[in-house]
Image 1 (spheres, rainbow, N blue to C red):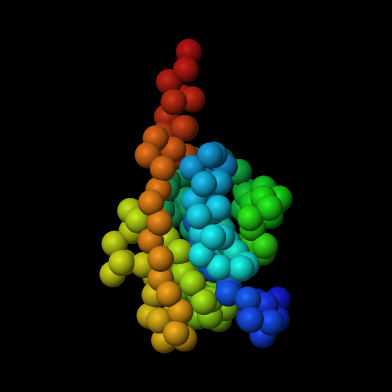
Image 2: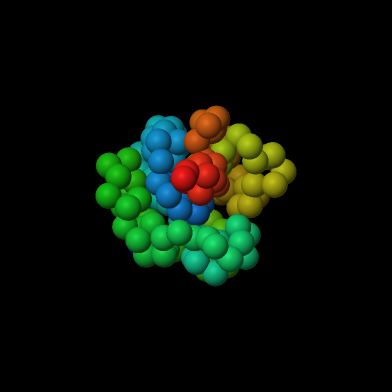
Length: 147
């Protein structure tokens, strides 16, 4: 959190997004690149393994949270990665107070967790287009169908 406060004190706009990011693919990279374009620094919160299992089923995640975070941190568009183990990122969004909250356009605005906290701080909520044909669930299905 101190890193985020330092960036903001320096006048940099901090963007926040979150997700599972289980099998990193081009759709993720494009999404994160677009998110980063909304500000000066990008913070990504990764769902902990237990929360992924609760939402995606017992076979997920494929990779543990620490490895997913490591892969994301290696991307040049990502400035900071954290792992959260609550059912939603509400607490981390409230604590970080990002200037911009980014989610995929597949999320209706009224279902984007943390939007009120961002708006209360004078920030923006941005919904970005997601890539059709790019999803971890679809990728897993294609691999399972291979002989």
